[in-house]
Length: 103
Picture 1 (cartoon, rainbow, N blue to C red):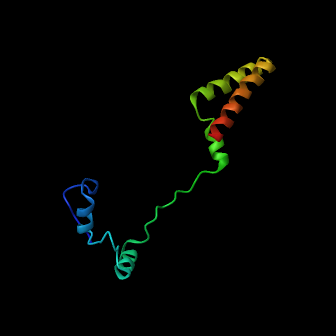
Picture 2 (cartoon, one colour):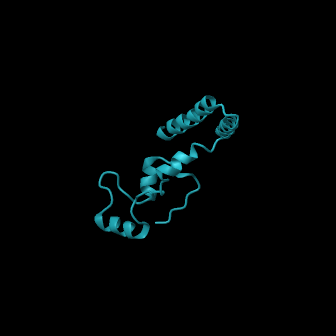
Picture 3 (cartoon, rainbow, N blue to C red):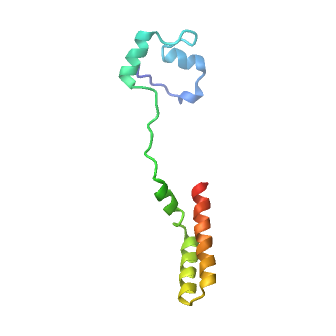
């Protein structure tokens, strides 16, 4: 059932595709043909991609240029013993990461 055609499939009408694939819209495939196609092409399912862990998604929130600048600014203000300013800057970084993770 390797059907070659000069037009992309989405440009064809439903009737044309049905004819080319030797199918029937009212009755569908007979069980014998369905099993043959299942053996030949496999099940009609999408492959699932492995997802990232929650920890990696959270850490990815810190991988942005503006966050690097804020972390550096927080470190500089901490080195200058400006604890409140440093705490606010690091607090903003953490809140940004939490919001980005939740979204």
